[in-house]
Length: 427
Image (cartoon, rainbow, N blue to C red; front, side):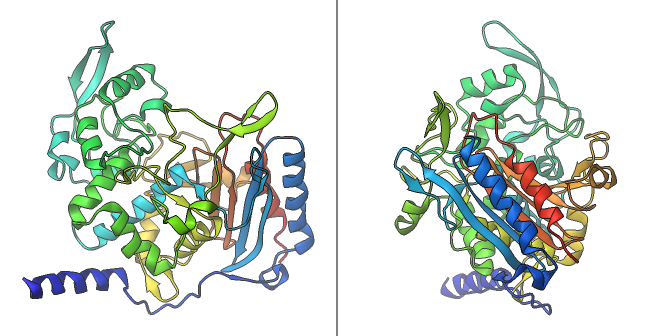
């Protein structure tokens, strides 16, 4: 038994610390001109953020710009907590919500590289509760509903590309699905209650789908399903898999589902506007103010559960710009990253200027031609509490802007930041 455990430990260690023939250094600070960017033009970001704070569009923000593996802009402006008169610092920890999805997708693809499954395997092969999936037909007045049988099984690819038909509870666009999820007691984001993702996903599997798998793009809890799938396939709790297989190798020391006590003070609260003033946001239907500080610390949401810093997330994105490697450690093969960045949803987004791959939304030719979106192949996403990121492989640029707010409709800093980063390229 000791020999078996030692073998399993060594096997996990090998996968977690796979050395690469490439050796891209970790992100470091540099002068903008060293990597073909203008310090003067980057300073326009300062003015934009200060104006947004003055005009009460945002309470504060941390912004980071990196090019060619060098951080050339990394600043904090405004307040972390207006009610406590607490200033925002660069190393502030933010609830990154849906920015968790790309990390979960990465974990899925790491296991795929080990030959654990095929992307078009039905998820019911690993989570039997998804057998015989049903599509919602009608919701009756007594809150019961009728269904029709799905025309195909839900696959892992469907889940990772938001084409499974699974919904998203509180933030779902279909009021019928919202009611069904609420009645079933589905947890959408995170909780301090003693609930596991396995328990949540098994309940979710019994509920009807929006549509037949593969038929449409419907933003969903598919990445939460895959979080549980990772636990099943790897034999490890999701938080442990993330830490040992992704965060430790990349030195992402500030990215957690539940923060260690020594880091709790760096977590900033979510704010909103009340009578023109910034106040702590509280909405028990969707957001537990004590997460991720206290509680049972048992629920690991693969779709929305992580907290992190701008620097840590930039490190994660730099690994992708390096085609799966950082600091001599390879998480993914260049060949895997290549097809992860390919269009996986066909024309489901229409002529929008972007498409979805296996971890990110990506810019196409039309998106590039719009201006302000980045080059073809730029990958991007954001989080529910107003965090945004993108990485442009052509220009080797990363842009991250972190805020922590909800129910605020006046914020224009996301698109302005991206536009201003682009105009600062000077080579």
